Image (cartoon, rainbow, N blue to C red; front, top):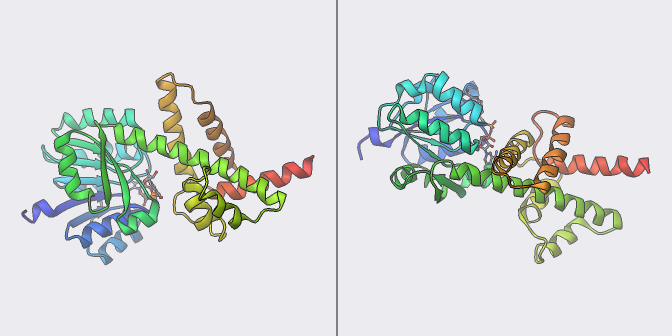
Length: 297
Ligand code: NAD
């Protein structure tokens, strides 16, 4: 491999992007990274990356995007000047949790410039990003998937799940499940607590029983019970993913009653919590709602 082959662009150095870019830099990739937040660029420099001052300046044979949503992905590619800087034959890896139908449209627009796209959203949170243990749900052609894997396999386990858009569809569906069982788990826990059960005792029993999930095995023990509510994944981004999943269901004429109800409840929480609230704050909000409901009775 030449030096140019070990060069990768990286746009979006937030809670997930920063540790991911750092892992690539430590794996001897020359990471040319951009984020509008200056401290994020400085942090990249501290781990051996090369901060640049615009998204267009990240242009390389392979460019990773780790951005909030499809709106920002489209703006960075098509309004920020990046696409004009990408040579034909380049590959964009969108690791953001974007909307699958929009991703397919982005792929068509990039193809007009001779540029390829794979979607490679992740699950595993900030701890997985730091440890390089993310689950990477990759959508794209076989050839592009192999090429993207040279970069993203440093970040976790790659699962090639289908053509372009498949990764983003699966990621949104995963998060709809995750948000729904966090809500369901929290209702059950609040009932148990009011009955007089100890929360840690409940979780220990549920985690060797059929009600267990990522919410009982990780979110409640790590972020709720200690009172930190600090998973590093915002409630606004979770709600965005849930809506991507239910919008997809509606566009495919599949009824998702539970999903629609979950979106409604999470939207209510989002409207009532500060804009940067962690998604695990839903538990504190449900607890407060339960307390005020019982006072009203
Ligand atoms: P974040 O808000 O911490 O990071 C997003 C970054 O994008 C910020 O640093 C922001 O400054 C930057 N950004 C915004 N507009 C930009 C622009 N025009 N050009 C360049 N950079 C821009 O979000 P995050 O938690 O790191 O999540 C990133 C993506 O990963 C989201 O799609 C999210 O849904 C997904 N995700 C997050 C987690 C998690 O645990 N945080 C887990 C899995 C997936």
